[in-house]
Length: 104
Image 1 (cartoon, rainbow, N blue to C red):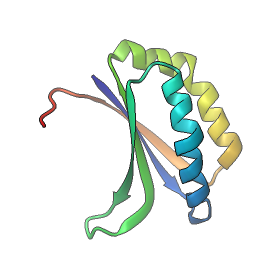
Image 2: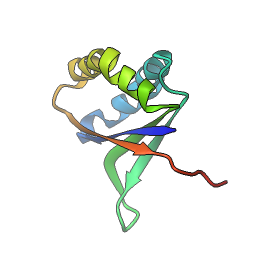
Image 3: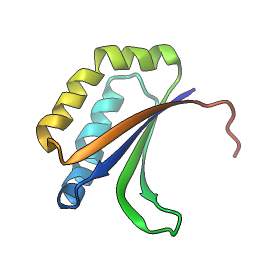
């Protein structure tokens, strides 16, 4: 499994609008690509457990091949939609993690 992590730093004035949009529109659009099996939205806190203006959305893909297909076929369109809606009011950075083991 591959975890595609998108961490977003938001301007305070768009935080509530972004939260609604990401949950009602963007995450469903990402899952509709059928490249991911699940997604989770998390709030980022600093070491003192103070809330920051940052969130991470983590998408789980069954293989690197599916993630690469998403990056080639879907990412440009979905990133453009985000840019069109929020402009420069957010900064996103992406990481790719290979899940070696999961313990429950």
